[in-house]
Length: 231
Image (cartoon, rainbow, N blue to C red; front, top):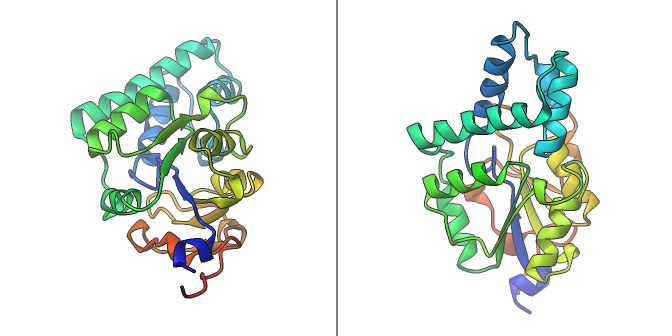
């Protein structure tokens, strides 16, 4: 028996923001600037309220929490344009070894990207990191009914990969992301982001925790997060 088959891992699914690129803070800064331009304050509690939501959800939540009259579509467009603009001006906010880890894993397993980000932001991130064409499947939560912590985006990624959810390994950095992956029936490894750390309880919810994405070896993670048996 090989290590791969012992682990039961047939595909690896990555989150984007906070796992491959250190962009969570960009989203937060764009929302803070948007709020400040309207005389409002975007707080840490507000950030938590939109973590993992798709564009429809977070734009609606922003309007409600800020108490503003802007249309949801305008809010979404403004924030997305701000984040894409930063990618275009500054390139990708790097996480040490993350892009190399994705390439290494993609050389051995089918890989998918399952992100809460808008499709334009995903495209900008993949272009900036040079990862265009690496992922067999790319899914935005905007393409499914519900964002994280619901499992929709992960289930859609597995469907497009043609792999059972239980055979998928997920790399995530947030509480809602870990919840979504677990709700999909997948094994989830937490890679905590140092810029915006995961909420309390996230480590306990994940099947395994690693310090950096470069340490991820899907062959050593079993279906319940335990180390795989030797081949």
